[in-house]
Length: 158
Image 1: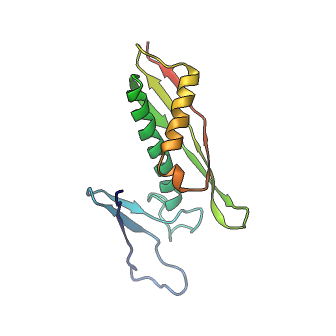
Image 2 (image 1 turned 60 degrees about the vertical axis):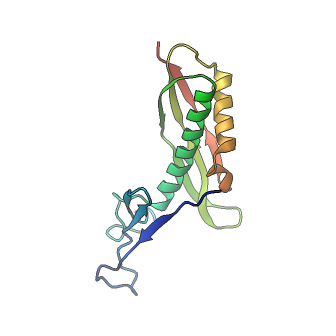
Image 3 (image 1 turned 90 degrees about the vertical axis):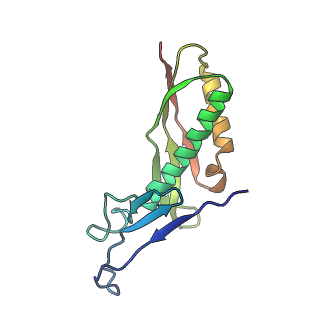
C-alpha cells in the first residue's frame, strides 16, 4: 500500500466573496516539486472567475485515466518484448448527468496512437489485449464508475 498526496491551495484575491464573484484560480502542489495552476472549467464558471489556462479538475481526471492506462500499457508491452517508440493519447471526457441525476464525467474515451519499432511487432489482436490488460490493471480506472472506452490505433516503424 502507498499514500499519494497533493496540496491544493486557494486564497481570496481581495474580491468580493458572498456575491459569488471570486477567482477560482488555485494551485496544486505535489511532493516531487511540481506546481500546477488550476481553476474551475470555464464551461462551469465563466471567465474572469475561472482561468482557461489553468488545469480544471475534469481535465485532470481525464489525464489521470489516460496516464495510468499508458503507463500500464508501456510496462506490459516491454514485458512482452515489444519496443514502443511513441504513445500519444487524445483522450476526451464528457460531462453529463448520471442515472441518479448527478453531474459527473459520464464517459472517458482514450484514443491512444502507439508506434512500435520494427522487429518483434504485435498483431492487432495482441495490441487489443495489451490495452485490455492495461485497463484492467489501471488503478484510476479501477477506482471510478465512469464508462471508459478505448479507441486505439497503432503502427510500426519500418
